[in-house]
Length: 306
Image (cartoon, rainbow, N blue to C red; front, side, top):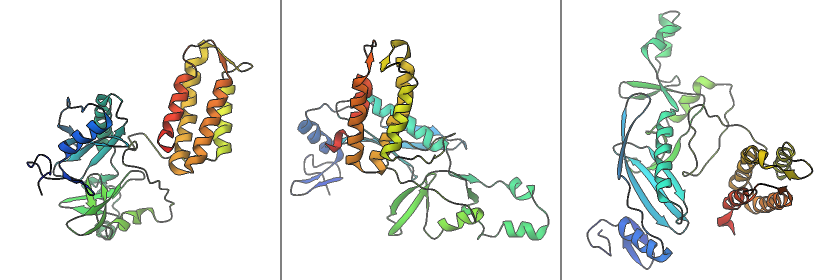
């Protein structure tokens, strides 16, 4: 169906009782409504080579919505998708560069590893054992002539497969059916699996990163916050000489608050954030920047919750 406004492009966005619009026309309408300028100075396509030497091509898409400006990268001929969201009033170039960085990290950190022929022979004891390792039921995923096994950490996305009419997982840009997924874990029988569901706009799990269990109870977060302050304060005074190191250390406590907001109770996170701000305001400092920037970072966490 054609866009109700331009009558040229295919409609992609449907607004109840208003009409159906292509993305360009929808963005123009949103920009006018939000009184912001559209950002058009960016490359619509990007190509990146992953760690296995494979070239990936992405279309870069921008969608304006009342919550923010969404920048997305959709793989051409594949199923990788990356997304970031920033405020309409922020520099949109930063959002584009952030998206590029996220693509590079995302395709560089593989959740599956290619099974090489040398891997089959390395621990070969006899012909019977070799035949067992080639059994399709043993922790491997077959795609064409390639076989993959699951690494001990990684990321996957839940998506609806239009061709099969059912949900599936997307791992390393490949669709994996619900029937195939369990066999990938056969190698890890007896192990525990932790998981965390995150928004598509959150950061990807990149190389040399791991998930770490973190206590996000209000008491623990605030206790860690006060402990960090104690490293740099003398009778509630912060010298400008220590301001940079103190702020850098407090970023970890602000990250804890973000986790509470995203995965705990949002109203509780907001109350804790205001308590942290009140504490920062009590501190005397000869630094001109403290604590304004930290206060801004904290309030950005729950700005949409007010």
